Length: 341
Image 1 (cartoon, helix red, strand yellow):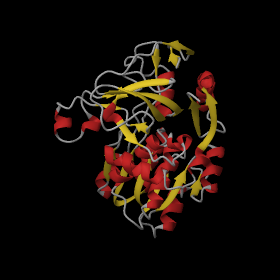
Image 2 (spheres, rainbow, N blue to C red):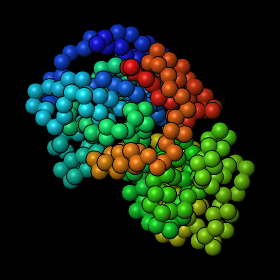
Image 3 (tube, helix red, strand yellow):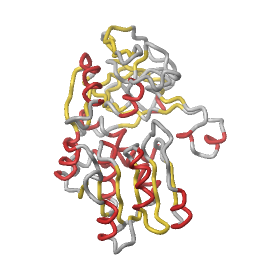
Image 4 (cartoon, helix red, strand yellow):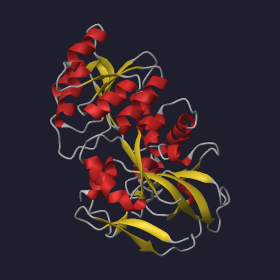
């Protein structure tokens, strides 16, 4: 099979071309990539914000569904033809974080797709320890949503969300909606805030309450719904200055705030409210193996409206156009790249 890949060349440019393919080494597998989703991290990389971590030309992408094409020596748990997804983390195994059982936030973590070549190619070689097996009946197109679903599972678990609690999710993009889906599965009442009209309408079509914080008084509404208590949990997924400012206004006494978004600039946060209401703040960065297993179970259940999140499927040659479409902030949610037939 000819290796074709989308190479990031810096300065917001991508080149799709041929490459060389080699047999996987010991402990490695070679995947035939079916679909790769484009996410906010990919946009940050495309915009040059991670040039200090990549070696141009670089293949990126990590939201993947694939079929095993070849296995290296010593790989016994997987075989050619297995359907898999990738947990794209390569920790050192030796730093204090790893020794404490937190290898997903390893102090020397290599994120595959940024620090090492990613999935926007027909054939992709990764360590076998990154693989999670997919059910045979799960369509590979839908399976490309497992990685972002694992993010949402980790976020909800970090929030210690309980049945019957009230959660506000600031930001109705793919991750925000997936958090809402997982939170609803856990029995929470959910409100999503979003400013993009396309996403706002989709959120409502999926059966969630939604408000535009630029035109509606979200704080007053949450207080009405909770008897003036406020939200039990606030997920900040917008990455905006306005979101950082409002998250402390929405949380109840001893409420929890979970920061999911990556902020391009250091935001202003009302620390007085942390003192006054005894708030708790949790960061969420990636995911752990059990988050992937929960995500696979949810995605493969067939009970969730996940395909509504897929706005478009494009060929590998259209990857740069897809990135431009997403950065415009228009009528798009999740775009998948079809990397091979």
